Image 1 (tube, rainbow, N blue to C red):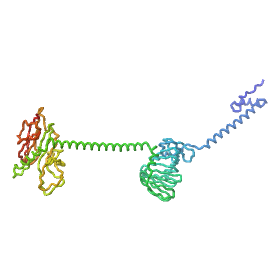
Image 2: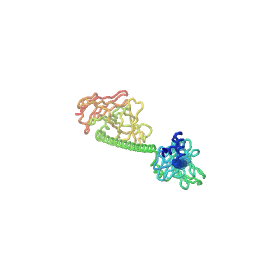
Image 3: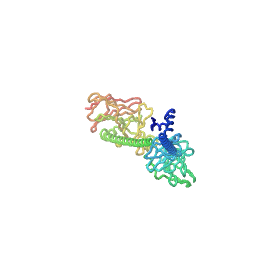
Length: 496
């Protein structure tokens, strides 16, 4: 009985998957058996067709793949980076027609062409810190050598930091030389170049000439048109489209700057408000105190009495010695506020008339209100005397009318004393020390004005006279003093 090989054995024999010894036996059987020989030939023909088909498919596949362009980016140093994209932009590497859609953070290389469609805006940043914003329908190319950037068509906004090297932008009709500036550049369909400088200066050069374009100026010219500078008219339109994609850091700086300006204005307004309020409050207090002095503590009746006493004291003083009569005023209100001041006549003993101001005396009382003999407030100023051991001021009166040679004028003044010269002894008793503040030989007069309800319980020196005038009582101490003598009176006052 003869055993014929299985069909699977023929397939393995054609593929060379059977050992040589077994393969030889099978071949001998096929040569002798007509049926097996016919089946083997059929299998061998089918195997050749399949092999040809596989080789053809592989070849077609390889040829199709190698015919497609390689979109892999060339290995060159990075020239910049895509910082922001609104919409869709494409990057075309040097020599390739198939582009890659740009995403933020994508590196840019020399030779790259950037295309922005009609609904997009892009922001790129070069390695040296230059920032370029591309508007819609714009196409530029990053170049090396003489020019750094070429605008094919469309519009850009460039922010270039000040540098020693000139950053040059090429267009079909001009070359723009930039050192440090903010500029707007546009290339129209007719190849006309439009330059608008928002900060700094830019050199505009074409085949018809060149011109330096300064801040807030613009130029529009084709390749053979002479460039002529003019004023920018539509700056807001530039600001509007670049605002949407401006660098966040720059926006932050601008917002901080705006906030700083607003804060500064608010602070200045507040300072102005407080200044005006303080001036208003000072004027209010000043008017209130002046009215209080003139109407309450030193009314016209008291002024007239003191004036008469002053004249009498001058007439009775030793004419040979020509002593000055220095009146010092002390008044205590019902609220136990102490006011101190002076009363006296001053004479222009110089050889010239004064029309602006006149120095009348020295005083240690700041915030002094000065009045004339008619009880009118006089404008005055105090100047600190340098090197004065008593810390006194020189009092100047601003003159309303000229003060002629030999003319005598009467003036008096009061100031509220901040220090507590009144010392409390008991529930209704206070001590007070009257002290002169003048230097030199003169007649010293102390005039103390108290409310009628107050009285003097004790004093170290008896008063010369007293007089009740209206709701007040006047106490006067008068005595001549030598140049080195200090006139002091100690008092105990009862408020009952």
